[in-house]
Image (cartoon, rainbow, N blue to C red; front, side, top):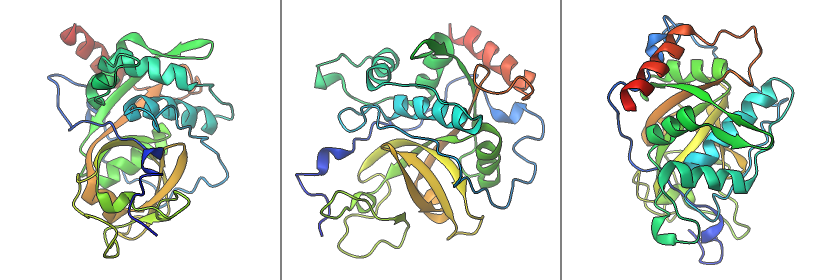
Length: 269
């Protein structure tokens, strides 16, 4: 066993820069009662495969782009179809949203989630055979009931977290710990949140609401389980995305959120 062996260290990259707030950015609180209503006590989706993909996040710090592509795939999976997203498409959006220049590692500096979401909102996220345009809104990252409502109603919550070196401990095969928790055994590295770096990932489902109940995260092309207390210790931002092109016509896309997105784009122009 080892902390992060040189041979395996390049299997996973980060790329979420510190959370920032933009004037007028959309907030999910404009949707009356959405975050405040009681979320489901548990949400189990083991029968549904969100089919997360790596999308270049083993080579580049494009987790903010990969997170959007995988959110579209998770939304499609819940509606019994799938969206084809290629690594090249995810990397192209990473370039568009952050200024990354392909082939120039000096420009591979990750992304600020709100700015990446703004780019997707304004310019779209190109996938195979179509370009998808999300609307989005931010939530208080400390509102766990709100996070659960986002997962339940918007397929997944788009998160920014501060990973610790201890979270990245892996065995000889490159596998991470089966469950991320705050009681990492000694010898697994620095447990300080942020000591490894910032990362964008998705919250997909959860077994309950207690500290030690598990949240399923979608990251690096796989499912990673974590306790709620781990997420509470690592989270720095949370956002909900809605896809009018992927959700059923009967799904309420909330006119208040659409209006907030439109107002934000006008102000950010």
